[in-house]
Amino acid sequence: MMELLKNMLGLGPKVDYAELIKNGAAVVDVRSRGEFAGGHAKGAVNIPLDQLNANLRRFKSKDQVIITCCASGMRSSSAKQILKQAGFVNVHNAGPWQNVA
Image (cartoon, rainbow, N blue to C red):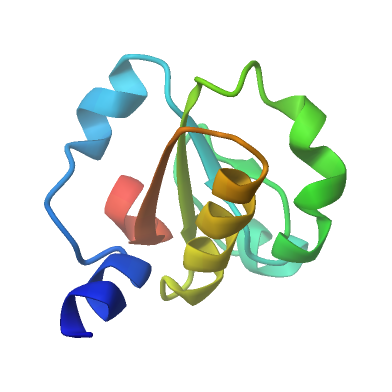
Protein backbone atom coordinates (compact mmCIF):
# COMPACT_ATOMS: atom_id res chain seq x y z
CA MET A 1 0.00 0.00 0.00
CA MET A 2 2.80 2.41 0.86
CA GLU A 3 4.59 1.73 -2.44
CA LEU A 4 1.38 2.43 -4.37
CA LEU A 5 0.95 5.73 -2.55
CA LYS A 6 4.58 6.68 -3.19
CA ASN A 7 4.22 5.92 -6.90
CA MET A 8 0.97 7.89 -7.11
CA LEU A 9 2.68 10.93 -5.63
CA GLY A 10 5.76 10.63 -7.84
CA LEU A 11 7.87 9.39 -4.95
CA GLY A 12 8.64 5.99 -6.45
CA PRO A 13 11.93 4.93 -8.01
CA LYS A 14 14.16 7.88 -8.90
CA VAL A 15 13.85 9.05 -12.49
CA ASP A 16 16.34 11.43 -14.10
CA TYR A 17 13.81 13.97 -15.35
CA ALA A 18 16.54 16.29 -16.67
CA GLU A 19 17.85 13.49 -18.87
CA LEU A 20 14.36 12.63 -20.11
CA ILE A 21 13.72 16.30 -20.94
CA LYS A 22 17.10 16.58 -22.66
CA ASN A 23 16.05 13.65 -24.83
CA GLY A 24 12.75 15.26 -25.82
CA ALA A 25 10.24 14.40 -23.11
CA ALA A 26 7.17 16.60 -22.92
CA VAL A 27 6.53 18.20 -19.52
CA VAL A 28 2.82 18.62 -18.91
CA ASP A 29 1.79 20.81 -15.98
CA VAL A 30 -1.81 19.98 -15.11
CA ARG A 31 -2.44 22.85 -12.70
CA SER A 32 -4.91 25.63 -13.46
CA ARG A 33 -3.87 28.42 -15.80
CA GLY A 34 -3.60 30.79 -12.85
CA GLU A 35 -1.32 28.45 -10.92
CA PHE A 36 0.81 27.92 -14.01
CA ALA A 37 1.10 31.69 -14.55
CA GLY A 38 2.46 31.98 -11.00
CA GLY A 39 5.49 29.84 -11.88
CA HIS A 40 6.29 26.72 -13.85
CA ALA A 41 9.10 24.57 -15.19
CA LYS A 42 10.90 25.90 -18.25
CA GLY A 43 9.40 24.40 -21.39
CA ALA A 44 6.36 22.96 -19.61
CA VAL A 45 3.04 22.92 -21.41
CA ASN A 46 -0.03 23.81 -19.36
CA ILE A 47 -2.99 21.50 -19.85
CA PRO A 48 -5.25 21.70 -16.79
CA LEU A 49 -6.28 18.27 -15.57
CA ASP A 50 -9.95 18.79 -16.41
CA GLN A 51 -8.97 19.53 -20.02
CA LEU A 52 -6.45 16.71 -20.52
CA ASN A 53 -8.78 14.23 -22.25
CA ALA A 54 -9.82 16.89 -24.77
CA ASN A 55 -6.16 17.64 -25.58
CA LEU A 56 -4.68 14.18 -26.11
CA ARG A 57 -4.15 14.96 -29.81
CA ARG A 58 -1.48 17.49 -28.79
CA PHE A 59 0.95 14.66 -28.10
CA LYS A 60 3.18 13.38 -30.90
CA SER A 61 2.57 9.68 -30.38
CA LYS A 62 1.58 7.09 -27.81
CA ASP A 63 5.31 6.30 -27.40
CA GLN A 64 6.30 9.87 -26.58
CA VAL A 65 7.90 10.31 -23.16
CA ILE A 66 5.59 12.47 -21.05
CA ILE A 67 6.30 13.87 -17.59
CA THR A 68 3.31 15.11 -15.62
CA CYS A 69 3.57 17.61 -12.79
CA CYS A 70 1.33 19.82 -10.65
CA ALA A 71 1.51 21.44 -7.20
CA SER A 72 1.74 18.37 -4.96
CA GLY A 73 1.61 15.26 -7.12
CA MET A 74 -2.06 14.39 -6.76
CA ARG A 75 -3.32 15.90 -10.03
CA SER A 76 -0.23 14.76 -11.91
CA SER A 77 -0.90 11.23 -10.65
CA SER A 78 -4.43 11.45 -12.03
CA ALA A 79 -3.03 12.83 -15.29
CA LYS A 80 -0.64 9.90 -15.55
CA GLN A 81 -3.54 7.49 -15.11
CA ILE A 82 -5.60 9.31 -17.78
CA LEU A 83 -2.70 9.16 -20.22
CA LYS A 84 -2.01 5.48 -19.48
CA GLN A 85 -5.68 4.62 -19.97
CA ALA A 86 -5.57 6.48 -23.31
CA GLY A 87 -2.72 4.21 -24.42
CA PHE A 88 0.35 6.34 -23.71
CA VAL A 89 3.09 3.97 -22.63
CA ASN A 90 5.94 6.14 -21.34
CA VAL A 91 4.43 8.46 -18.72
CA HIS A 92 6.15 9.62 -15.53
CA ASN A 93 4.65 11.49 -12.59
CA ALA A 94 7.21 14.02 -11.36
CA GLY A 95 4.93 15.25 -8.58
CA PRO A 96 5.45 18.94 -7.77
CA TRP A 97 6.49 21.05 -10.78
CA GLN A 98 9.64 22.11 -8.96
CA ASN A 99 10.95 18.56 -9.48
CA VAL A 100 11.40 19.32 -13.19
CA ALA A 101 12.28 23.02 -12.92
